[in-house]
Image 1: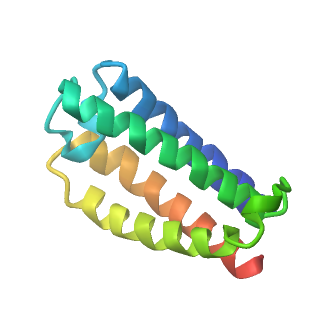
Image 2 (image 1 turned 180 degrees about the vertical axis):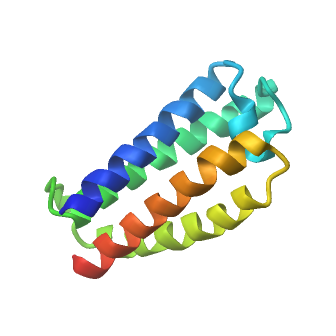
Length: 125
C-alpha cells in the first residue's frame, strides 16, 4: 500500500532528525518548539526515546500496509496506526503553533502528511 510506504519514509526522516538531536547536533529549531538549538542532555534522552517510538510506529505502519509480515504485530498494527494518526494530528496542531518558523515550515506539513498516511493505511487494512 503506497500510503504505508510514503508514511514510513516521512516518519523515518523524523526519526533520523530525533536521533541527530539525541546525539547533540544543532537541529533543535526543528523540534520541540524550537526552544533549543542543541538539546540539553536530559532532552537528548527524550529525543532518543522518541526516535525508538517512531521506528516502532513505522513497523506498525508497514505491517498494516501489508509491506512486511511480523506475527506479533498483526493483531495490533491497525489500532496502533489509528493511535499514531490521532497523535500526529495533534502534533500537527502543536507544530503549527510553534514559535519556531522552521518547525512550522518543515514539521507541520510533514506531521500532517504522516498522520494522513497512518489514517488511510489503518482504514484500508
